[in-house]
Length: 437
Image (cartoon, rainbow, N blue to C red; front, side, top):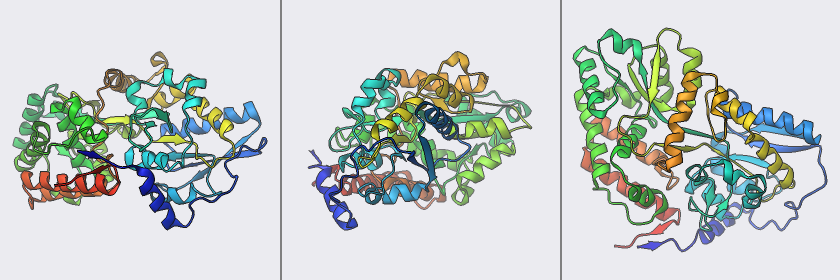
């Protein structure tokens, strides 16, 4: 096993292609008190975290007299072009970044993000954020997560939950499941009654996420570390990966998941669940606030997939301070405001999963249950993150494999072979690891 020789060499090659490397400017030096600082983000305006960020900015302006100039970017703009504008004098003071080795990790290894470790100690972020949640904010010198330096601040978390239409369960005389055996039994009863039980899209990420939750019912810590931190080569024939792939295939054949899922996107399945067309839907907690607001015709409940030992989730997108920010101290002060108890409470009350809230101040019972569930896994360090984080190619490549499984054009063995090929190619191309033979 050979670990990568260093992202620095790869980063240098990437930056040389952009024509923006080593600008040689003094743009990163702290200037005097400005009229405003810039904050680039791509989250939706209605998300709990965006609301909290903007409220924090108002408080920050009252404290300092400095305004926060928010500027919306697309996810694609930041994901694909960040290595270019972050290495120029056009870099913002604060930027939302996707987390993971292929995103924030790569940018940190390219020395385009500020090491926030001194601020984390100054403001006590390392005391407020659990070790498991901090793992996505901290990277080593090669850009691998769970390192020793903070390169971003997590202000919220997200994870996959299974949402149940309680009224549909009552209509068909079926109990909401608490074990995997009960889950599969409930699915079969719905199929027998002519109802497709599970809403799942295969055109995007729904089936992939459901598969990774199934992996979490059989996984151990070694598999999670091998998958995300490249501790050892991943055995794609191991019990957890094989079980999850075979189970998804079984559910498709039994009709628990429709083969029509190949033509569905996440918005299609979300809308269908809201309309009451499916009894079961696994989706991210980012939809919880939407369900609270838009589901008016039936009662619902939610929980992690029955039997999960490792929860599919982690801290949400990171708030980072680019290395070329001219106002790092002010930026860090704003970040600290975002992590304040009052703003964290707001995230919880708006349907998000906060990092450092007072649970007694969360007024919605459904949100309180969600936060408790996540905290129970986070405090034990039992998070499995998302499966596509090890390399930037995996989001599309893994989804494509599961679309083939749903289509019936690949069997489970072929899908696992395709996943292995995509994973291996991705981590090698990213420079994270070097396989030979």
